[in-house]
Amino acid sequence: MAFFLKFAHSDEKLFVISQKMEKIMLDDIDRRLLRHLQADPSLATSELAERSRISASLCWRRLEKMHEAGIIQGQEAVIDWAALGYAVEVSLRVTLDKTQSRAFDEFTAAARGVAEVIEIQTFLGRVDVRLSVLARDMSHYQQVYREQILTLPHIADIEALMHIARVKSDLVLPV
Image 1: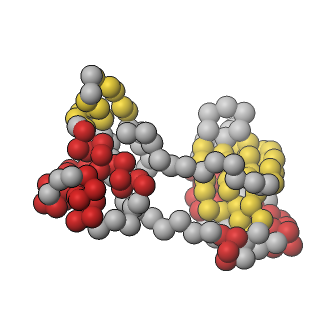
Image 2: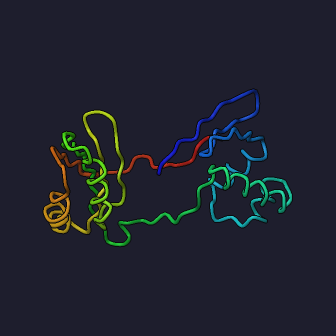
């Protein structure tokens, strides 16, 4: 289940409405921790504490508080898919047959089962769902598209956008 964090500035304080619908105040120390963590997620707690100019125990408590509030959701490895031989990336914009009451649920459940689909996003508007698909080459993409994508339930229309270049890819927020 996805959720959104709402941010509200009040002077130099940053308030976050967490997934638990709690109002949590982030101070300069929390924001400093988040900036350093975003810049280098592999930092050990001791190194993060040193860079943030706080004790390791205070750093650990602050990180735990932000984990529990859902502000920090985890750390992940960023993989260069092209280095692993996946040269084709396609964004598929899908419009679903919304006359079917379970179209979204059934489509997304089935799309999750396609290994080459690395991201699924839903929208309000003309396009209902966007799938990010990776393939080794065009032949592999064509096979995935014909055998797995086109067989997904409730597709009314589909548009493929071939990825050419990633101009910006940044999940860092200015905190």
